[in-house]
Image (cartoon, rainbow, N blue to C red; front, side, top):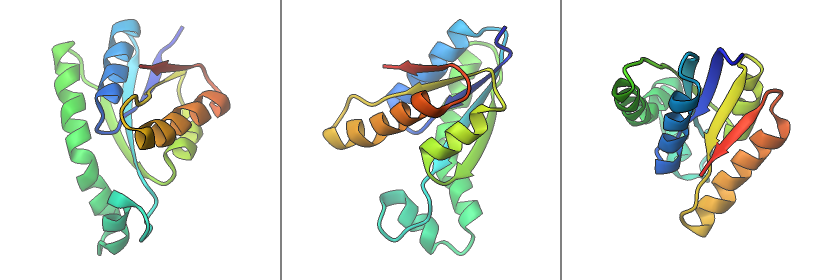
Length: 139
């Protein structure tokens, strides 16, 4: 029986679909939403702000606020609460590492731009291949 579900979310519509899927299918499970901010680097979009911030952990929490707000709104539509957690690092690696604490992982994949499909698709593929628990990829 699946009692604990990890849902990986970013700010995409497909990650919102992943959360809705998890709440629909795993109605009695404890659901944790995990948002992974990229590793600090001067070379990557939002991660540049993390690298330049005086308090990188606080900046990661700030970047997660919108994701968690939306997750809370979706969960309230189902009349439930979800746990929310933030991590910093490579999304695929952090999700796979955390997966061992759960019975299942639900993750969305992107169907937008080529860059989204390559980056997010690779994250979903890596999680699917490497997680120690069942993974559902939602389109």
